[in-house]
Length: 394
Picture 1 (cartoon, rainbow, N blue to C red):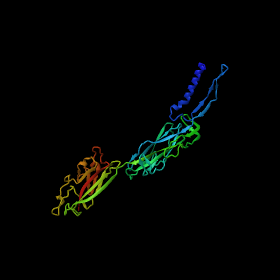
Picture 2: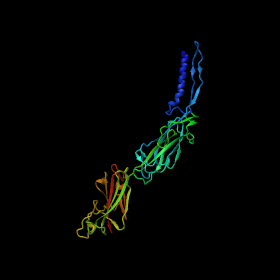
Picture 3: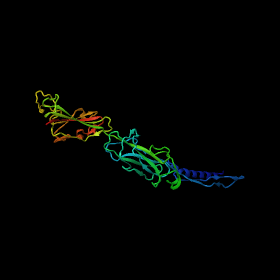
Picture 4: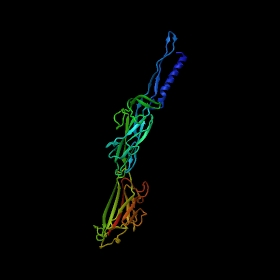
């Protein structure tokens, strides 16, 4: 081959390489569907010792087909924490077009996945009004997604305020490849395809060989992923105990609930150690019977040597005169009230506890203020708060 012909041959090879590989370099999904691939071969020969004109073959042309492939992935990476009463709570998903043509995707979700385990969390209830991108929406068709691009979507649901700590609700999102019109499901065979190159009729092949759990067998143009809500809440219990601690005849020796007797009320609010979240207490209310009168001084019961005895003869509680309410924190609490009980007046509401007529109100955000690592009114897992007051029987 002479030098001129050699240079021409190299130039043809280089131009052919650029035409074939340039589109694929920019896209991990491969050469765009509808790209035409042209190829012409050349033969050089001699007759005797004389070079003859080169002969070109016919130009062979084919069109790159549509390799339909998609992935649906959960973007949360764990359960999504929800509290009782949450509304429009989101599970986050991403649909990625791993194919080489433009697609839309029809999104659906099956009924709640009863009893399944997702992210080490087991489903045991149905959320309220689950939907795609908004509560109650059963199906959604995405906008056009280009190769190597993605669209983010959500499952939205409400969590009933009757749910308790560690309850869980699992859902799946299924995506199916549709044509760019958003109306026609992709099917293997020959069909209309649109890509960055243009629109053509070419072969369509499903390449989704590894499918999600909820979208059926492989090579069906679908994929799916799961997500799960987990209720993270306090485990609050509230108990009230009334104990006769003194009467004017027996004193503190086997006292009886007779007129003039002193009844001690103890409220215990507990957040279990297994709870997933703190409780933020707001108010505690109680209404005394009309047959009772608040003890304004939280009297301390004593023996009655010569009955009848009087309430006035008893010592005042630890807060002194006028301090009829006691609050203590127990369990793992590091609040100040865990070291020394706090006392609150029966005559002023400014300190957080008030009695108006027979109605008692403890404003817990004031009673348990911000301190250290605690928010106002916060009761962490494993902690109790105990409210104590006395009343006499009329």
